[in-house]
Length: 285
Length: 135
Image 1 (cartoon, each protein chain N blue to C red):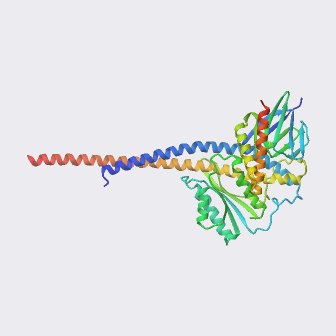
Image 2 (image 1 turned 90 degrees about the horizontal axis):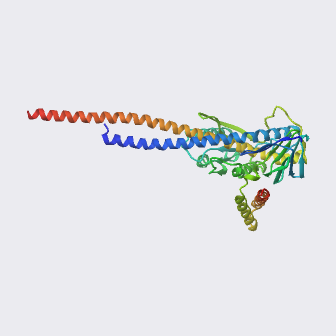
Image 3 (image 1 turned 60 degrees about the vertical axis):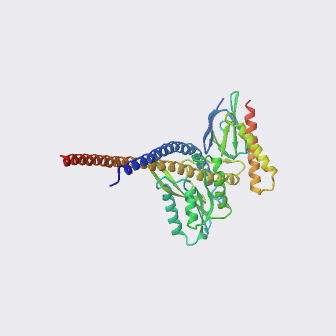
């Protein structure tokens, strides 16, 4: 049986750990709140740009802008969004596992795909696996603003345009609710399946549809990536909040159990001492 | 006078929402003025100011690229960044301007960087000029 002092030490260290996890939980919960707000603020922009893009792309069916046309696929791009830090439960491993399995089942050699990794955890994993990581970005802020990540998005879209890959999928953890996030795969480029809004408006174009698509489509694709990133950030903080809450709860349980055995051991020691004294006194008589 | 709704939205959230009498801005093909009842139209914008006229007041919004979507009763501006004149951080814009000028002076870099610096300079100048107009 562990000595009194050993148990005491374990209780103390568990208490310290639970203080830390409690603090991390609270930090994540405030970040999560803001992350959800950011994702909400983005919705009107996304809806509007989707509506306009769909109206224009549908309105000019004959247009063969490279971003709208599927071409024979020689190389596939995967944009994988993970977090920079761990301690978020299965948040990162879920995304990574799905990408890894998909890539393994779809491709035979490293030349058939390219990975763009956002987030340190994902990048480290794919590099360690010897996979073809063409671009990686780490240190994205918890509340990213569009201008901050524009470099990433425009280079990802640029790689499609210059033929580095012929289609682009994005993998991220979609925020469903505070306790549920699911890994989502979305085909980003070419833009073959734009959701058509209920009412299409026929627009006049200034100067003409082609030139507008030239500007609009990259911007649309970039905002899709930004949307995925915001979504992923909200899930990251929700996942971390949950993981830390579980850790704090577990620590509490553990402290309860340890206190119980501490008190038992203390009681046993006292009982033993009394027995010894009584025994000693009896021997003297 | 008739009015129309104007929304300026960016990926970071809505920036401006109001009823105005006239919107006037610079599209890539030139200066553009829109009154209520305009036919549906889409036009890409230049880096510049959007003037929103409402009675005797005029609001200024600095936009960096993006689109103008017009419908008879609403005008939506989809910009990558946009700020109301009262919300522009002048000091930051001045710093950005200096940085961009500095980069343009050290010309030896690649083409892309050069273009980017040029755009950054344009954005900074735009912000500064709009911010100063309100005084």
